[in-house]
Image 1 (cartoon, rainbow, N blue to C red):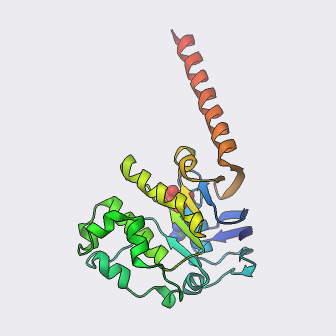
Image 2: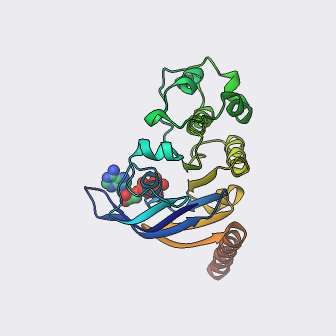
Image 3: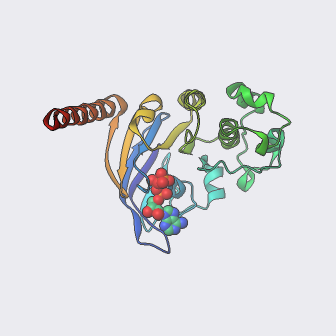
Length: 243
Ligand SMILES: Nc1ncnc2c1ncn2[C@@H]1O[C@H](COP(=O)(O)OP(=O)(O)OP(=O)(O)O)[C@@H](O)[C@H]1O
């Protein structure tokens, strides 16, 4: 489905921040990119969405070479990005967000608004409210709903649970998990394996712009758990030694 090969990306004001990243999303599944701050997660998502042009490497979506495509062209090809920071129009209502023209004219098949409201029932109750009147979770839901309105094949989501209460974060990850059944592949950037384990089938670990590895979530979660146990054991040994 999506093949990212040897992707190197630099900003004009800096050297490369992604170094020969290679990963594959084979079909409609949820994949997570995990890594600490500045690992390059947002850079990767923005490059796939056409906001940044790679220095080297390639991007293929369902066999089409989409490397270096403009963002509007990427949207028409079925790539939607939900960036960090919930970039909504603060004075537009929920209804107006759904009615607003899509970037690049959007795709011919838009997701029906009723489907989106079934997915995010909280937004139906806020239909006439302006974006700035919504709470953080509702703003995130509206941002994701607007991206889904373009009927993407691939949804890129950058830290969707950041700053949200656990119960609201759960509502969002529950929606993301349902998307592959609707034919949508999801690549979600998250800081920690613990949240990623609740949503993703596969995790890709990125650090300092390099992909350290990819693993099915069960395997990745057990590696993370072993890491936590080893850390707890070392902490306990340290406490005993210091008594
Ligand atoms: N517009 C920019 N110009 C120059 N450097 C940038 C720009 N945006 C990001 N960077 C740098 O690129 C590196 C990767 O940043 P990026 O935002 O992709 O990481 P991230 O893993 O998404 O981190 P975070 O979780 O903090 O958002 C960082 O060193 C960052 O300072």
